[in-house]
Length: 353
Ligand code: GDP
Image 1 (cartoon, rainbow, N blue to C red):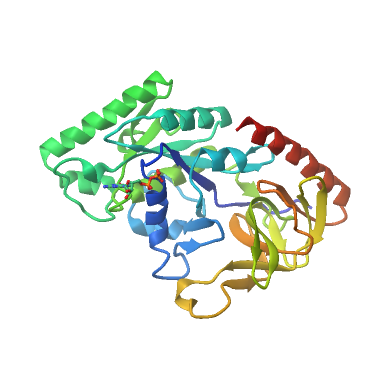
Image 2 (image 1 turned 90 degrees about the horizontal axis):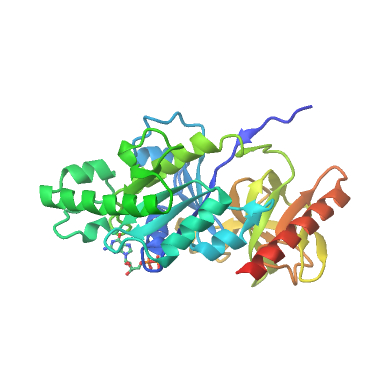
């Protein structure tokens, strides 16, 4: 019987040159998670932040061009190339898409170019955040507004400056072999890279960045994002950590299927494959419940895509970046072989960096 497939949340990595605003952009996206934990709100996962589609819509990004069936966006909280290249899934990158942050006033720097080369190699769709637009002299801040709204409020000189800076980026991207345009002038995401002027400090342009990512997912990836939600869980280990009262734990990005308490899992250790059983699955407690002693909330199961903490026996020596796979219906040998193959691939990759 064919299992029903659903489209999972795409995983997004933030890249770009140091100090151009990667961390600030992620912080700004995360910022709204503190206030509410209602359905459809931005929520903190382990090592990641989930922005559901309702939150994107509420921010007012122009979604009119896209018919949305992507459930939202899962941002990996660790920015940078290293996270992108070392976090892998089935031989490719764990991240399905990327934001390349570039300081609009400084333009491209070595790590910007490096990021673009990496994304080209992996054939990963991306959007350019032309960040720090608020630093343009005379800019009038309109907190959290979509770009076109705030742009319309700027005086002619400032508008002209934004245009000039964006065209400098278009020129640089063209030198590197990419066609690009300001996002509101792009009608086909397959032909042009979208440039979105943003401010990680004021939130301006952020609704549009999220909207473009949804559009990219819709345009490129609805096939590759199809997962069987009730299939065995598959994920990538972000970090291996000892936690008080829990022992050794894995911070995991789950990118396929469902992981349940009691599932048999296979992960890669330093020099051997480790088989163990999920003892508990933990997510961060909402901020509103911060007074409760226990930092984590226990859940019985979790469905991709999600960031989750896994507690289990025998996790000593698990390597960061390792694949994790759940065993179902007696396919143990097959799963062990898969993990073994995937770990060889990350070892090759780790020695490259
Ligand atoms: P990263 O190294 O790429 O992660 O850069 P950070 O996010 O740490 O930002 C570097 C500096 O630039 C910090 O002082 C930020 O406050 C500042 N910054 C980042 N984004 C913006 C922005 O959009 N506008 C302004 N004015 N400053 C920003």
